Length: 263
Image (cartoon, rainbow, N blue to C red; front, side, top):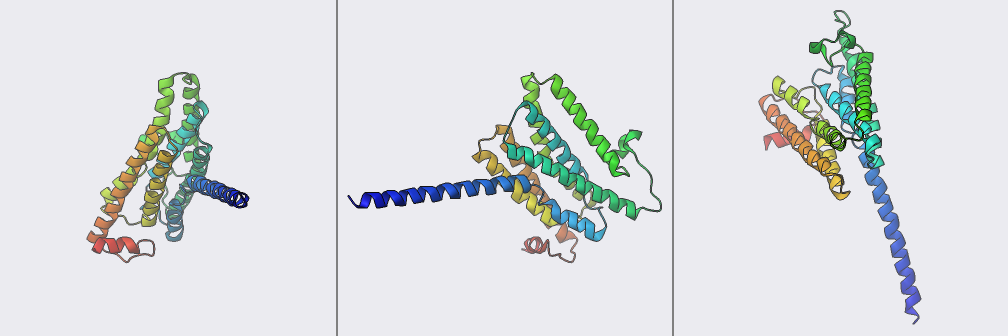
């Protein structure tokens, strides 16, 4: 008789502890989802800042992420999804703009004497996403955003278009690593690319895909997440292969990848 109140108090304490722990883990997962996407680009940003050289980094990666997240935000207006994914898109767009700004500034400093001015308003396809000024990149993104908003507004009641828009946003992001993979393949080298960025890509994409599965996100989200992980792994394989072919002094970012390449 006297044990019941004590047992009840213990149960209440356990339930409260589990509730607090669950809330804490939920917020940690949400924070990782929002800010984790930009973490892989911190080593690359620092490397470009330190070396004053953006040659090994493909700015098409930034283009892919910018288009993917712009489409995702537009998709949110016609079909609402979880707010952490919306916040992630806003943070990612900001980070990519900062990275492009750094690449443009470094290129201008490097080619200060014989710089050829390339402008977005020249509408030359061979110069696409290889302009001289940061403002030209902003003009291009503004045109993409306005075009996407206008088309989506006109077709907002067309279910097929809305679903294709959502699929296009995640599929575009799934192709994120393809430009970097192709540039590495052309150069037969991964010099100038931060290996830690690729490791963070893989870790983040694994977490993201798991998040989609646990939260029962639409099927296209976790399918494209799986595809993105496979592309990340392909680039990691490139790092190992090209380091074997062209041995170089290991950096503190890639020591463990170099160890893998000799095992």
